[in-house]
Image 1 (tube, rainbow, N blue to C red):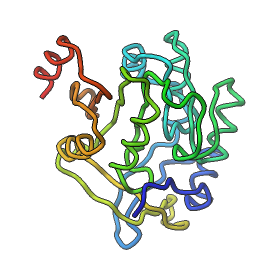
Image 2: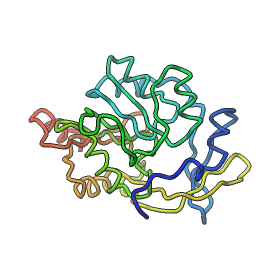
Image 3: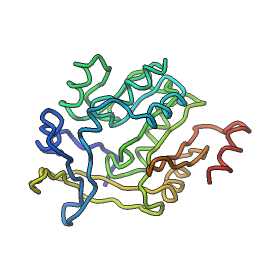
Image 4: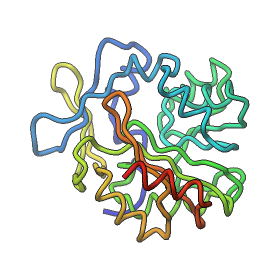
Length: 233
């Protein structure tokens, strides 16, 4: 699998329809397997929750939210006083965001983007570390988008050692699926290796409200950040 983000068509109609007419979660799973990860579309369409607003207030701008969906974290960052932009392959996500006055580009993070090399933070939440099925390539791309003191904030899989690449599908509540696309799931321990390969430096790891996060820097962290990293690991 290569670090190429899936085309919107690969997600099939389920995600697009779920965003436009939300009736319940969609399930992202391996094409040849059952089970999978439930994605709550209603949450993506809602405003950022209290935890997400706290995260937004702690970011350095400008913020680029990769795989932003309808843009709730872009809105949260802007409400925190930061310049922010989202990018998502979904036409529905981009259209919904724009209708709400949230700036979102429809496209891939691997496409040319505005202000490359000048972003203060790139965000990879809600499983977006899986985009393209190659976490190392995605982290390298996000690193290149940052300014020298920029950071990457990643939401990781609950299983700290998960490190799995697979052909994914999205299924609706009836089990119907669309086309396959490359995807990955990464826990915080495995993420350390991918980040090291992408020449990123650890800042901190933390958990809140049953969600797991990690922050990495493009260049050496300041002493206060090193102390925070020791407390978080």
